[in-house]
Image (cartoon, rainbow, N blue to C red; front, side, top):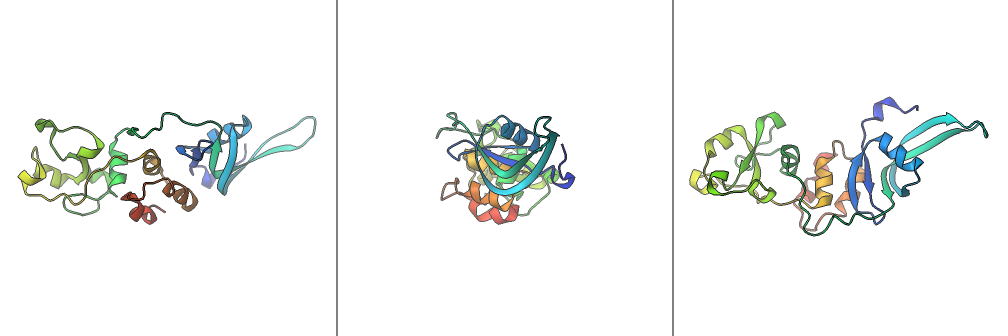
Length: 200
């Protein structure tokens, strides 16, 4: 296969046939879906033109164009209203824009930590609606106390991302067309809507 080397890292957004965002895949996985005739339709811009082998009967070289968004046959029945995405520091920090929700400063990932608003020692839970991004200094200052007990103000209310929001948070480099597609699936009140241009 011959593919432009500088674009190999760009992820393709895969959806189900109804257009519900499912996951990010690499170009190899996308080509496999095209080859297996699992692609229902395409959206977005052309990302890759992949050249395969030469057909011995027709003497033509196979070419597969891979777009930034591909819809595949079938529907994902597991994405219901009660869906809760897995929690990780990477997606948590992305949810909060790499901003400490106590001091309001933006930090690199290595200077951030996961803070439990209601501490685990006080029966708090390790769940999306009880965790926020905090710089290590603020997290150490807060220690095993609630924000009220430590005299610290929480700058935003933690929330559980929907599946579409979670797919966005997991993206490494989200293209403008992918971003618009995902945004259409966000709740109208999603806090991520205001921050979308920052991820271009």
